[in-house]
Length: 183
Length: 321
Image (cartoon, rainbow over all chains, first blue to last red; front, side, top):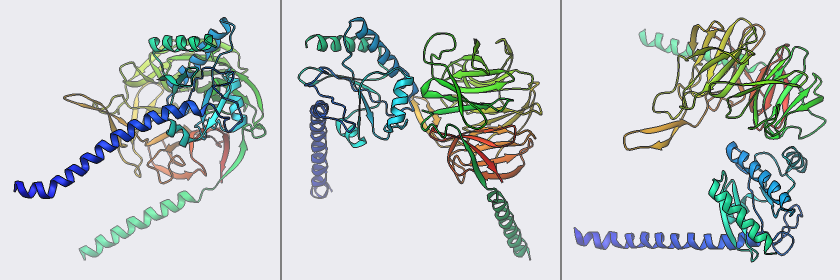
């Protein structure tokens, strides 16, 4: 019985184990790759021709994905964060290094320019925005709703989902100010 | 002989059902008005609306933090509200609206605050109720009937006057079991006849109460299941907690003659399009089907349907012929 088991089942088990190992390493590679490419994304002009370059004016960029609007608490915190950023940087008399990333085909239909303008107007959002596709969202591993901060080299140094707790909020503003003042 | 009787009984049953369905589909709808038609993308997401005696229509634009006022020709007359902490501003996104004479009552999402505005959109006052507001409607004495969820997740009815004083608290007859994380979410409407109709979104039950706070009766809609699908949201060693993941009913409205219109959810033949028209005893009078999926239905003084489409992008007026 044991011999039968070894002959018939062991190769199958080994095969499954190999698949598991391969899956784990692929996931790790994907994650690393995704983080690298996420910063690269902002070096290129977006579909709506807003320049979002780490080489340009925005030394640090925050991507705020407002895709899944089913989470209204997330959405309200997103607006609160935008308000805090505007206030914080206007106090420092600096231009906020902020960019909003919107998924094409979002629940609010923000890929329609008129709707997007109305949305920004109603919510006093003065940050530039880019619109990227759903596949890019998945590829870069952006989860709704998220804040991302990059350093001057373009490395992703902070990623936090919204609603964001106090200690992360503090960390987020500190990182952002550091990045900005190191200009 | 007995077999023949059974055969003819079954045949009769199917024939009756067939003719009932045929009768339902014979009502045709036509769109007669689109609010803001000339100004495309006027709503970021409309969630609730009401019509006042002068025929003006007020719509909550949830993600714009605005209340928008239209005349009966669909022209935008005025906007009010914005995000903020001041009087007449909204801390949370506005979500529900209902009207009584010159008063508009507005509730914010996941909030216990009711704000009163005049029909000219001037801020009047605000007051807090005893839990999160699920739905609300005025009765014909100007008392505000509210579906409430308390911090423990229990749901019930509360009645407030315009000064913000609670008049009644009513526990409903039907609710979800203890294995559920929250009590039953429900929508409500108050008829001119003095009856209050409550549709549980997660139970196939319509409850009828009178404005005196007495239970009248409850009934179900035969075509629909008793409970929707559920999923586990909270595991512990000894128990599981569930939440419903689909809806049996989406909205409820009542016309000038006291007929009740119940918008079916996921389990209707045409989800979020079928409207079951019933009398106060629960007898189905007809079934209407809207040409698009909707989230909200409202009956105007002329018994026409004002609807908000499922995405909340548009508000339309439909007439059934």
